[in-house]
Amino acid sequence: MVDGHWLGGGVMWLFWIVLIVVVLWAVKSAASNENQSTNKQKSAQDILKERYARGEIDEDEFERRKRELKK
Image (cartoon, rainbow, N blue to C red; front, side, top):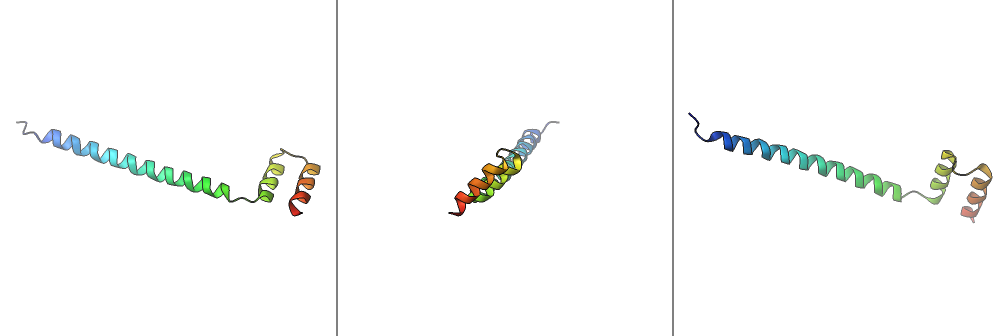
């Protein structure tokens, strides 16, 4: 009754599951690296604007640093 095909079929399912997991991991990793490289390309003025928008620095500090960057 059992002709030995179950083991082959089970291994094939395992292969496809592992393959899908590896592909998903690779896509997620590539997307993560893309986001990191985008952050590295920000100018000092962009970073200053973000810090001001988040409330990390006040208006006086923002203006002072902006003048320093324009020198």
